[in-house]
Length: 70
Image (cartoon, rainbow, N blue to C red; front, side):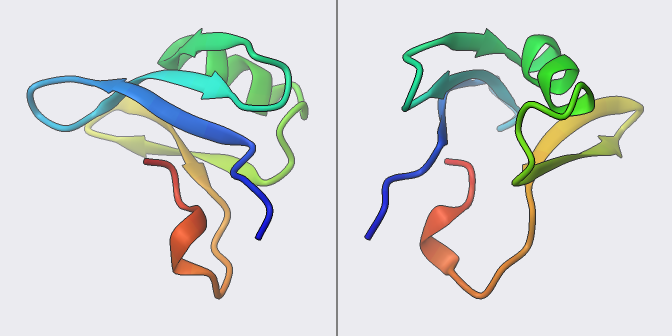
């Protein structure tokens, strides 16, 4: 099985993902940096949802349960 492109490396006390790690490039990103990269089209397997008025990165749905952000 291929490894996930992006992993969550930190979350807030409420469970919101706050820091992300690109497992291929080695880059760490804040939530807002990751959102900006998704909006630029650099992460095609992810999209943005607005949750509680905050842009939130989420992985695109597919039939695999083991490749969600986490």
